[in-house]
Length: 282
Image (cartoon, rainbow, N blue to C red; front, side):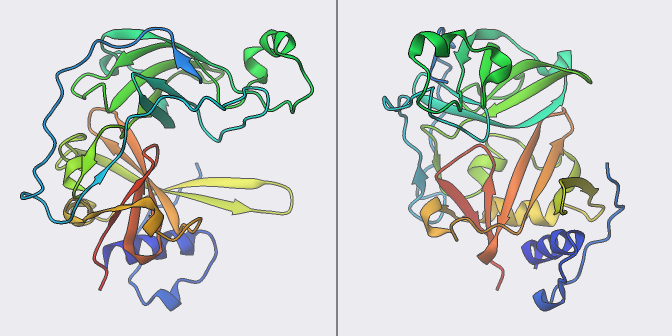
């Protein structure tokens, strides 16, 4: 059972016994290791949605939507950077070392500064707050990623103390998913291009949360094949707030994405909300 094996690995890595899962562990080599856009990309040629007759299930369609009018930058707080372009919400969970090969055409500029300062400052003073004081902030030019539909994936350069980074922003807005094939092959072309997979593990101590990245040496192909054939289900059908662990998957061109493993064989794509894929673990 592919999901169970990966889940067992992650649980074992956090110090929790995995014996009760009745699974075989995977061999590893442990190592520690906005409210609107001011310009929008040109409308790319839209790809046809998969035919319901070609894929099982009713499918899950993620709607286009404008930013909620009730977002108040003085009171809102978000776990990750995000912004909207042409009704599509883009969210980022992945940052990789900057590479010129991953930067394509400049599409526009976005500025969304989200603060967590309570309701005590008037709008004039909120505007004076610095970029560094913002949470979940996005500011800068955004670009195409060569080989990917900009309605699905955009990139943004980011300065870090340890060097320049590239943030990936994913969007499922306006997409219809029938199986994992629609995401992991049609949009990501992941089959045959996975270069590395890591289990992202957190250990909470009395004083801090330690984070580890554990390389997975097992062939990822069977898991990816099962994921591609897994039917799409609405997110509300999955166990809310329950997760077994997280995987980082890197492709040969440097694009990276994260998968969230949940009980019942559900797998979510970090950055795309409203849909999950259920692998058969019977």
